[in-house]
Length: 174
Image 1 (cartoon, rainbow, N blue to C red):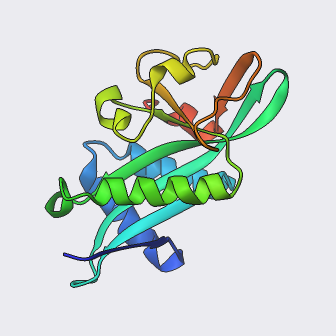
Image 2 (cartoon, helix red, strand yellow):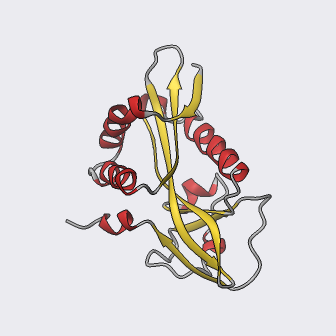
C-alpha cells in the first residue's frame, strides 16, 4: 500500500465529510469541520490517498486558536479531527498525516498545537497534558493536550489563555 499525503481541495469535501461520518459514532466531528470552514477558521487540512485505489484513507484538520503567552498572542492551532478509514487503521496513516501537518505548521511559524483527546493516543505524536496545563481553557483537564512546535520549545512567560475557534462550542450541544 502506498499512501500520498496532500493538501485537501474543494473536490475532497464530500469524501472528507463521508469519512468523518463513518469514523465517529455521531456527526459532531463532520459538523465541526463544516462550521470551521464556513467561519474561515481552518488553517490546514491534509488528506491521505491510497495511491493504488485512489481511495481517501484519512484526513486531519487544524483550526485557528487564540492563545496568549505573557500577554502576547502566539500562533497556535487545534488538531480536530483526525480520521482514518477502517481498512487503513494501524498502518501508519495517522502518523503520516500528523507528521506532515506538523512539518507544514512549523514551517508556517505556528508555535503550539493543541488537541482534545486520549493522552495515550495523542501522546505518540508528542502531545502532552503537562504542556497544556498552564493555559486556561473550558477544555482544561487530562484530555487537553499541547505540543510545542518550533523545535519543541514552549514559549517563555506566563501562559494565559487558549481559546478554540467558536465552532468548538457546538460540540456536544444538541
